[in-house]
Structures are given as structure tokens and as C-alpha cells.
Image (cartoon, rainbow, N blue to C red):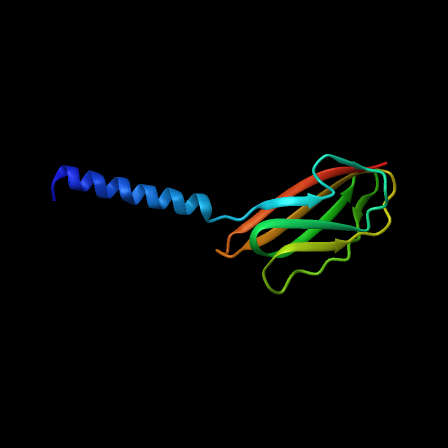
Length: 118
């Protein structure tokens, strides 16, 4: 094999491996409330929308003032892209939502967002 052929093969291999790793992972596309949102209306549910199918395995909410908030959450059995989690009436304050999902490739995906209830 010539040096030029070996270089082309290496370049092609790197191109495919970089492309595959860039597109292999799914992420959070949107949440409601959104990151940094200030909500004045009651929040009855949290919605999470992902860029591809995932199994949502954990959602936790923490009030900065009062600690953990009990949510109406059960881990998803099958994959989906849109999830709703019931929320009890929230007092005014700062809240953080931590979530974890499993992507179709088996990788764990985690994230969080914060919002305020006025």
C-alpha cells in the first residue's frame, strides 16, 4: 500500500468516526419551564423534549428554600422524545430540575435547568 493510499484510508476512517460520534448522542431540545424562566402562573407539569428517542429514568426537583419536591414521576418503560412530569403546587421561589435519560446507544445523558416561580 502506498503512503498516499494509506493517508486517504486514515483520513476517511477519521471522518466517519468523528461524524458518528457527533451524531451518536441525543440531548435535551427543550424544557418547560425553560432554563432561567420566571413563571407567574401555576406550574402543573414539567415537559422535557429530546432530539431523539430516550428512556427517561430520573427526574428530581429541588426548591432552594425547601429542599426536595415530590414529583409524579415514574421511569419510562420504552423510548420516547417528549415527556411530562406532574408537579405539585409550587410556592414562590427558585427551583432546579435534575434529569437523567438513557439514549438509544445505551449512554447515560444527564442535565439540569433552573426556573423561578413568582
